[in-house]
Image 1 (tube, helix red, strand yellow):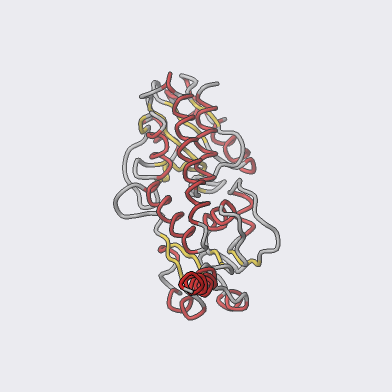
Image 2: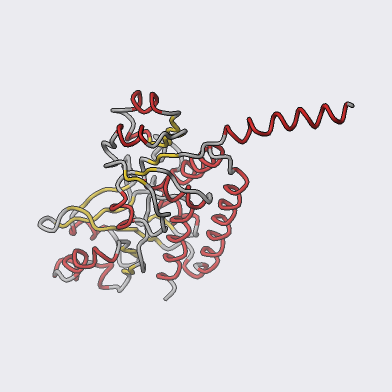
Length: 287
């Protein structure tokens, strides 16, 4: 009789536990779309899918509803999807958090903490998302894969241990070209250090990068390295920079210490994007 009652209690508890896991998720930022994909599910709605397709290498499931821009998503479209969870980063929730909470529970992520490691912040946010959708075990397997990938890339770069590497992406406009240089507090620079390399750029910025003109790259010595990261669509913009005489005079360029990472590599994403970056950086520096 006691065994029967125990089994009955467990049977009654299981549906409640399953129902607690969010199934209809709306993602306001691209990293959530990528992370849900790694967790084996898709959001019912997401913001700025055109931008996602440009910048993020991770494939996305079909059938998602675009809910507008990441800066000002459509509350009407979100509500029409009847979500049971909305995921939004803190820096995008300042204007409409109260309205979003009226639609569904909101998970606020913190990708750019005021202190501490942005990479650790990404891992923390990923774990919180995995728990919210009832996929903690799968999430831990993904994070173990991330740890293994970083270890393999570090081993591949053993001969370059201690070398300074700066990570750059194109910024500005075609009429006023500029370059984003990733600062030591960025998730990107954290990966660089975990691969046994040293920061090739200095300073601190809220989002982990400083936008500078071409002449500022003279701060990278001839013994350092620069890795350019950008989607293939930006090849023309990068070519406009690298063909200039000012670029060719840079010490790091004269030393032939500039490398380009192949493919689309998103530097603000979750575990999958981080693994791609680590693998591609290791491959570019060991050619």
